[in-house]
Image 1 (cartoon, helix red, strand yellow):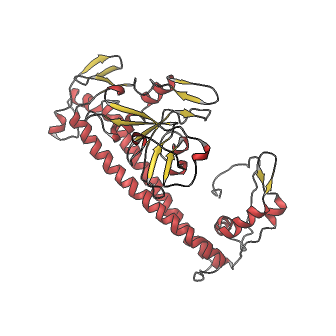
Image 2: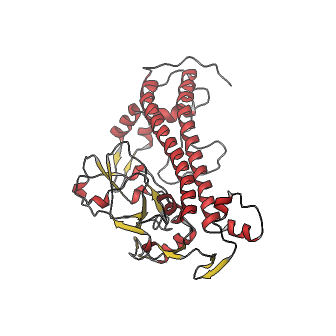
Image 3: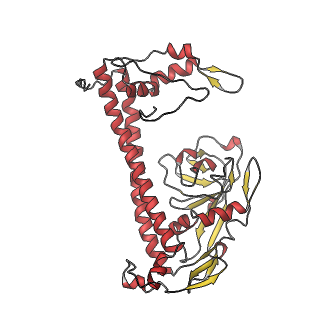
Length: 356
């Protein structure tokens, strides 16, 4: 559904539907088209072209859509919109929380703001115990100015990297196991469960990905290299019991207390890491990450107590984000159950007065 304040034009293979005012509610039309009843009719009418399926305009115009009176339509759209609004609110809150945590990581471990504040005699905004961990000077290193006493470390020194499982198409069948694939990465980084593929093949124990672990995309088919080298923090799955990394992904695990899962996730989301991995990328149509890209990345390693403090903050944020995801999944399931019953008239809503 196109927002009312958006000025745009249609691309190829798209059709604009304008509901008649006073006869069809725009949101109701959207939900009706998404309902199993109408989707089934669309699949029956769908034509197959040489390269893509198609739905011709005469067939689209002939679709039979349940049409209760306008008050019922608006009542249905209000109920279903309430689910969508809450899901969108959860999504926005999660993005804000992650952006705040990312900003905190950058401030402490990339821009070194607490060090600069201590050098200038400004309040650090930290407890005295934590403040004592912050040096008041910089050293010169291959990365430029880094906090005094923070050693330069490469990821190979403090993480274990595990390659994912190569698979055949005949192994992608119904199972309680799923592969974390390239499509599990959002463009720009981040995780989406939509990319999971049911998998019935064998795998090594170390290729199993636990919720909260970090994976890195090793290949990319986007023209702007928006996925390769980007991290994702894997979430629990309500559909599959076990998640396994595919060959397109690399699992990175903390080897000791110098890092943590959340520390690694935000470290691998920095501009420095993205630039470093891009410099170790080859290919034209399909991009590939070299084996040395992740292990060779250097960073100024902060004191363990500071890593633990950040990790506790990030873990609390991650828990809130996961709770929001679970709530949204429940809301989406309830909306999906209500949608066909409301559209078919099996459930009716009280008539709502015409607000217009």
